[in-house]
Length: 364
Image 1 (cartoon, rainbow, N blue to C red):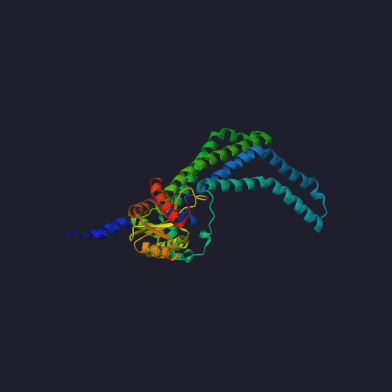
Image 2 (cartoon, helix red, strand yellow; image 1 turned 90 degrees about the vertical axis):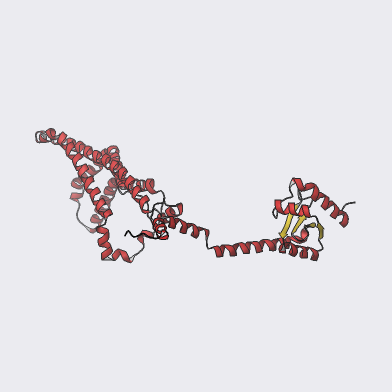
């Protein structure tokens, strides 16, 4: 008889499958750990193409500098007497001349390598990959990494890259085979110029092929990265719970916020001109200053037990309490603490304030 799993286990199994795209929070966490979609072939292709372009522009100048180094070695330095001072001077001058030739290539390599990484992952700085982890020195884990599917794929990619570039180089050489066989009959200058041009052609073809392979490899790395950071439905639910926080903590925070809001209202209550009540369910305190306010403002309000507490405080401070059930309900439903009275309630509130001002003798 076929064995059936309970429905709950089926749902748990399917919810554990990583079939959902990663959330922005998951992507940020992966980036903090240094886990990004990146191909090492892209900066290599940039460096090779940049080197070819640099040599095509400054190659003549660099050749002159190298020839001048050889020239000064065999015309000036060879006649120097070897002393500690002369050896130090010779070393300094030779080092400076060599750095002057190599520096443009080194700077271009650093800039283009950084540009190749920036175009893939943007600005990113993390020390997570440098952290010491015990599993890195575990021989069993190391053997698993060596014989993992990903390692085999990388090996096949490297072999394929060598095969493609090697085949292209062979075809370039084969197309020039007749000229190569005749070099022994040519002059030295012609032979060097021909070999230099052939070398430049080989490197250019290799660089273009490497760039195409780098683009394909980046697409593959992007696919593998997206596949690796997929999330299950349960992972997404757990992340949402974590982002929203513990319900108990959230309820405590809301309670503290309500307490702080009530304390502020009680502190502002002595400034009220009138307290409009329901009389037992609602209480709304209003203040109006014609010189500083455009309209009457609600500075405190409450319902049920909070309304009773506001009424007690209003009595303590001698604030006039006026019963107006429709107005109290309308104000409580339409405004918040700190809001001005809506236009449709202006007349009713104005009549209440006018009555209060007459009682206080503010107007005739």
